[in-house]
Image (cartoon, rainbow, N blue to C red):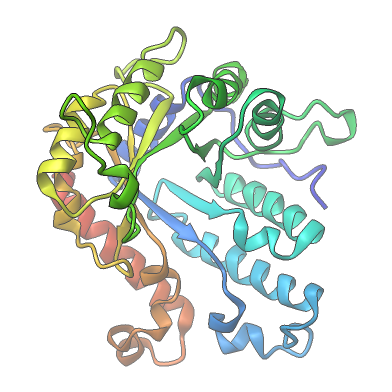
Length: 328
């Protein structure tokens, strides 16, 4: 299913950060939609279709999820600069799910979207190299020479340079100009148990990781015309002082910031992650947009038109982030 579907994908410039900034400027939208499909929450129009209404059948459940994802991609494509696909939601369907994941990467690319593969891989040596080649590198197989892999991936920096370097090298060497987002401060409730641990020098552990990301970001061949690197960071915190501190610690990095909406964060929480010129951050919304047809605010307006609920929720999200980034 994944070997020959690149028609319509336009050539891209070399540096990943430049690509992102160009798309943000065109759409005035430093936003990302996370697409994490759960069968039980799919619209009835899809999950009750006679060919898709069996959650216990792997093909029916996967086909339903993929149909939903394809339609979400088409809905949000005019409004956001990127989507984020969490590979876990497809790996649960085993080999066909992984194939479906790469189909969606191609689908999004054909709609002009930057694709972030949320894989959160972390290992060392050859294992890290294989992960990087599988998820970020250009295909080496002659019968998959048209395969499109994500434009960027999320990785864990816990292994240090040994774990991250293969991804950075794959991003730098790709003909399409790719990127890496290293986990620095995440949005989950228990993150602080480890990420906020104080070190002997007074810094917190996430600040040490931020300093390491800044070092990686400054490596040769990674900085674009606007001064941003292809090495970014995943940052999400409700603490405005922490957000400002992390912004200052990684001046060359784009900050991928999840947590909006369903995780309880509002647009104002992300303001410190942007620089004064409105650049430097990509805010992510997921469930609050893709399942907007469950939200009474949108049900009241659009009743059973689930696609219009998603579109309006996406527009509302984009408008809020435009305002805090001062791009409106």
